[in-house]
Image (cartoon, rainbow over all chains, first blue to last red):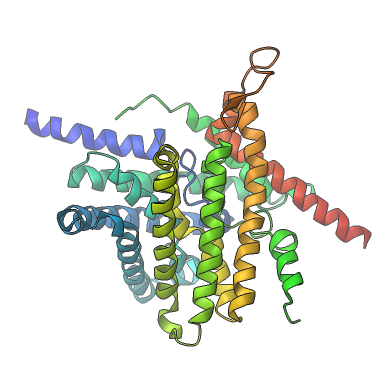
Length: 200
Length: 204
């Protein structure tokens, strides 16, 4: 029982550090484009956030297996960029078909942004950062899920704030991306407070 | 309106600047601008990849089937990014260690996909090359502007050389090289450039 717990604890820690101290959006700057595009409303933000959690966790796992059991033994590490992006693109295509089939409303709401998950840097970023860390398979899944969860939390909050900001009158040049960047900057300040709390 | 080389360049550099107008390619903008040297390498990579991938995609535009064009474009871009990755590693391993993951992320830099999809897949090769190059330049000059503010304010250095004012009457604002500083700087640049455009529209 004790060894089981010892094995479980780092997984939780990895999840928490990926989600909060090393927030993929606020500290690593990844996934900004789709974040700025989609975060106008809370519903769509949450929809895309959930999709991202699912895709990051799954693709981090798949890419881990591909890298360590296919590319590394063959000495083809320099092909990692191409391999990862192909895995991600194929996986997103699959998710897109499933969502279209089972939830047309969600499909319509996310519209163009579902294919854009492919070029969402958060997903490829998680797969690339994972290579620098000495994680095993389960830990990698936790890292991917944590990263996705951090993105989800950030974009959900940004969506909620932007809904309110729409009613404010702003200088013309600051509307849209300008003010959103300032909001994100202030949130990043808050998240700097998390740094050092969990260290892996 | 037909696109002449002149209008293409003007659009990419100012009127439809990828960063403050279309808000594309923000991730790398924020991540690498804390040191000017990193920024220059990153800009080199982006200009190289947008120009050549635009050229290649434009050359192949008749042959790529519509249904699979996204994946083909991604593959073309990824192969150029791999080249850049290897070149930067050879030129400067220290910088590569820091910006390595972000160089890989040029693949998912939306500017490149955006230009490939919006311009290169419908236009002739040479003008596409120019468009890619100009978009890369439009991206670069904003990045360099941001880095020119962040590095001196945050570290008190420029390109690694210590500025004379450091520790004399100037102490570093560490916040400028941390993530929030990046967001605030980009917001200010966006505001300034868009504000200029808005005031120009009013006078004409």
